[in-house]
Image (cartoon, rainbow over all chains, first blue to last red; front, side):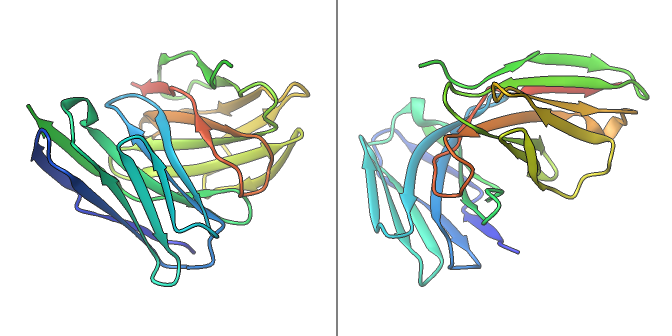
Length: 111
Length: 114
């Protein structure tokens, strides 16, 4: 069974800093990896999807990388803003399209 | 294009009652999955439907059931509610049923059982 871990569990940074969120998974035979953002009490917003054949995916100030062999992905956020404050989750699907989620990183960007 | 919609958004029920939650996927999406989110357990997979067939089921008791209609809309039902069923229930849709496609989540239904 796939296990997904996210480090750190919480992160607090001043506005303008660049930051890295980490995600690791135990089974490297993945189809893809998806990063989500969740605001308190809300649903999940898809940020980036990296296919297993890709090494990187970029969207605006976000850049996600994938290293299947080591079972790791990172989400890089450039020039952080208070509006980036949220919980960030990574997830990988199995063959039955069931997603395994990490426990998330709670990010606070201080103005 | 409209996103995934879930109704109702908030629900308060009493122990022993039953509840039905609804999910409308993005137009054209054929796969619908349901997840339960609680502070203690995080996001847990309930089941996935594709073309009106349940293809995958998580480790939940039989009180949790669902179905999908021909227009891909899905409902989930929880019977004999327990206090521990209080959670945010999230629905996700994707274009096809294989794992290569991006999943899009709805805003969730917040269920409180008293």
